[in-house]
Structure formats: structure tokens, C-alpha cells
Length: 551
Image 1 (tube, helix red, strand yellow):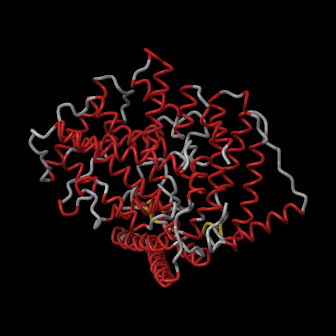
Image 2 (spheres, one colour; image 1 turned 45 degrees about the horizontal axis):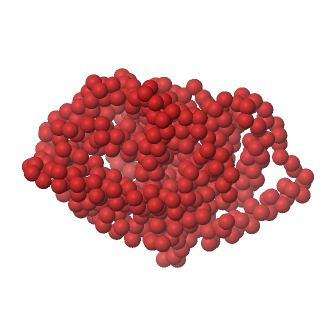
Image 3 (tube, helix red, strand yellow; image 1 turned 90 degrees about the vertical axis):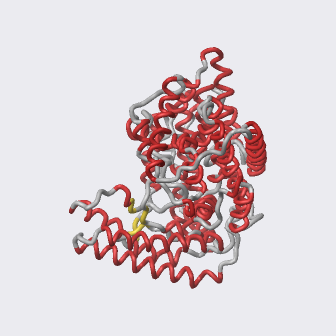
């Protein structure tokens, strides 16, 4: 497997570190190999190791440090390989596979993706909104300032905490100017835009905290000045960046199989997404034919109407699930949805999802299964420490994005829109949009197209012109999927895997199968790859055995 152009310096340092270690007579540690509790102990140690050391008060992402850490990673992988989990319970064997996948994730990041060297957006510190997934989508550094977690006006303790979080920015961005040796043009240009948004976020924070003490105001000012300087440096360097940003088909497939535990290759994902794109467009046309005698769907026209319709949609969804006994109901489900209903958006600035919700909010709220996942992780954490928190490197993507996307069509087929047939059209439009953007991301990672062509592809194959090229959503999505291989396709491939799981699980249970049991058992397995959930629910480990044998 080849490294990206411009990163030979890292490869040389890594090889040198390995050679020095070998000459010193180092051998893999077998300590920790044994039973399941030893695996848990190794997992705890591994998670501590995954956090990088500090350098001048900021996380250290320098090439020399990564060369050393890469060799240490190999030792952790060798220690893990010394276990023999064959006699463990299925749940314990699944935890072993999760730890293995996380270590492979770090291997892929260091060997191939290298966001600290290729992707300026990696150095974003200030985050204004909570992600609807277990962790941030895409690669982030290890010391973030999550502004959405603070209540304003800030208490003295909160001011001190936020000032400390922002204080790393000058040192981190100074380090970034040394670390960023890559030649990925699309990542460079879009990452520059991400850092400019950090300037805007810091300006807004300064306005929001005008009455704060001097330490926080100084920290905000220093962070802003460092970010402005960094943006200027990125812009100065941009003309020299002319290389591809995709990781290539081989690397993409390796990450799918060894990190995200998706039993597919790049080519197989392309086939699935092509099929789903065609199916979505065909289904839309058939729905339009079915509904041609019906009046057009009304569009929400005022903020008051939006609030009314949004609340009615949440009420309808919760009642539908409860009355039909389709889902294991929890107290957090209703408030979790109502907290995310959104608000009225003027027609001229509505992006794809705002267009959908201003026709029928319910169509997007089914996707908000995400917020039930987060509430479950908060209120009913998994008993296994390996599955309790967010898995590293977005390994949860097939489950998180796959279930949220699948829920849209699951509810359509279950009858949620029987009294609103035109809403069914929106479900197919949403699937077409997700298939189109996923296909575009696959082509971009194969370096068949650049990000501008990826965006054009997504616009072309999203029905009714709902994917507007003049709004931020389009650029945000394709940038994210270029930054995180496999994420753009995970909505559709994860959905496909969950549909296949429903087939296999219903075959196993026979007359005892219900949708309520399916959702409940999937949820209880945790936020882990669907291939592992399938093993736990059906006992079929063929996918994992095949993945373990993949090159």
C-alpha cells in the first residue's frame, strides 16, 4: 500500500524508528493476554495511549512523535493478537473485535489518512453545535472547545475552563504550520474555509461574553489572532497545492473492512449505492403517478405554522410507534425529538433538509433516531466498558447513520404516511439525495472526480432541484465525506446491512419476530458496527471471519 505524495519524510522517520527498536532487541509484550477482564484492562490502557502527549500545551501531532507512537501501536496490536478469545461468549468476542478495529483505525490514520498533515480542518478547536452522532463526524484533534456545552452567562468556573480550552489554539496552529506537509488540494482549500469559520465563531463568542473576566477575553483574543494568522498562511500556501485528496480504492476498501467492519469493497459499495439511487428515483416516479390526482402538498409559510406542524409531527410519530407497539418506548423519546424540531427558515435560504421539513417535518424526524441513540447512551449506558462510550474513528457510522436512514423507509412501509401519501414522495427524495452524495464521495475517494465535480453530481441526482449549490450544506457534506472515508456511503450501506439483518433475524425467530423486538435488540447491542450486531443477534459470524481474513 502506498503513502500519499509529500509524506515520504514521515515514512522515513517511521521506518527509522522501527529499525532502531528492532536493533535494540525489543520484542512484543505478551502481558495482558488471557481472559476477558485482561482485554478490558488492555482496552483501558489503549484508550489512554491513544491520547497524544502535549507539546507546548497543545496535542503533539509532529512527524517524529507519530513515528514513535506508530511503533508503540504495533506493540499494542501484538499484545491484542496474543489473546485467544475463541472460548469466550459471543458478546466478549465482539468486544475483542471492537478493540481490534480501533487499533486498526489508528493504524489507518497514521499510515494513510494523516489529517494532521493533509487536512487543515483537523485543527479546528471551536465547535458551536452538538453532533447528532456519538462523536464528531470526521477526524478532530483531541482537545476541543465545545461551546454548546456551556450555559451563558458563564459562571467563574466555566470561564476558567473555557479560557483553558481556548488557550491551546496559538500553540496548536503554530505546530500546524510545520505539520501540514500534504498536497491534497481539495482538503486544503475546504479546510481553509473551516478555519475561517472558527474566526467567525470566536467573534460571536467575544460578543456573547463581553462581561467576562480578563483571562477569558485574553484567551478569545489570542485564539482569534492565531486563527486569522493561520488562515492567511493557508491561503498563501494554497497555490502550491495541486494533488488529489482521495485515499484511493485500495486504501478505502482496507478502511471499510478493517476499521469500520463493513464487509464490502469500494466496488461493492458503488454497486449498492447505484442500485439505491435508481430505486429511489423509480419509487419517486411511481409515487408521483399514484398521487397525481391529489392536490400539491402545502408548504409551511410562517414561524407559527412551523411550530404547530413540528409539534404535531412529533406527537404523531410517538403515538404511531406506541399504539402499533412497534418500538420499545422510553421516556426520553418525546423530549429528545422536541428539543431538535428546528425552526422556520425563509424560503430563499432553505437547504435540502429545511425544504423537506417545511413540506412535512415528520419525514426528517424519523431520521432523528440519532437523538434517541444519544439519550440511550446517556441514560442507559452499555454494561460493557468497551461499548459504553463512542467508538473511535467513527467506527459507529454504519449503525448510527444506517439506522437513522433506514428508519425513514421503515416507517413509510409500516404505514406512517398512509394518511399523507404525498409525504411518501419526500422519503424517496431523501434516499436519492443520500445515495447521490454517497456515490459522489466514492468517486472522489477513488480520485476519479474532484470535490467540485462531486458537488455537481450530488446536485444533478437529487430530485426536484432541492440540493441548492449556493448554500453551505452541499460543501459541508462533500468536505466531510472527503475527510472521512466511508462516511458518505455509510447512510445507505448501513441501511442495507440493517435491512439484511432484519431478514436474518426474522428467519431465526420465525413467528416470534416483531419489529419491537428487532429495534430493542439492535439498540441493546450498542453503537457498534452492524456486522457485529448481526453476529450477536443471529449467531452468524461469517462476515467477521471473512473480514479477519481480508488483506
